[in-house]
Image (cartoon, rainbow, N blue to C red):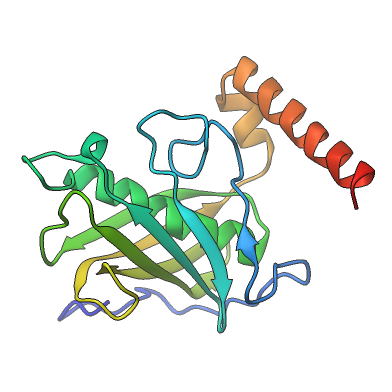
Length: 192
């Protein structure tokens, strides 16, 4: 993402090195939580983003814009597009680095309208790490991997401990999350 006068990342960083357990290129990424607005299946009107790992520290995601996602008549809501990028960027951090992290800052540049009925192809990449700070950026193209750029974003994620989620998250939601993870492990053990 180019922004004249601003370098990215804005500080000196170390290269982002994928975790040894990061999914390999070609892996489709499962949703991290069924009730996640970004990737979950159980959220009516959610984004239902589908993601996969590509070569070179990159995650590619697709977001189909529906009537439920519009702001101006026939066009995707800008805040919802920012949400889609937050999901894609966060998935990149979580899956490739395998660290719990939260969004500290998200910048979005809207280059062209995104119509209802279109598919946004988001390519997110890790740009560097500085201590607890993780820098990522993404381009979103309309209707094809090589389509015109419609939206670009860059973000700062901050590594947190798991207690961040247990201390600040709703108790019932955390319990559902734990139960879902237990069921997934049981399904995996039963049907290897």
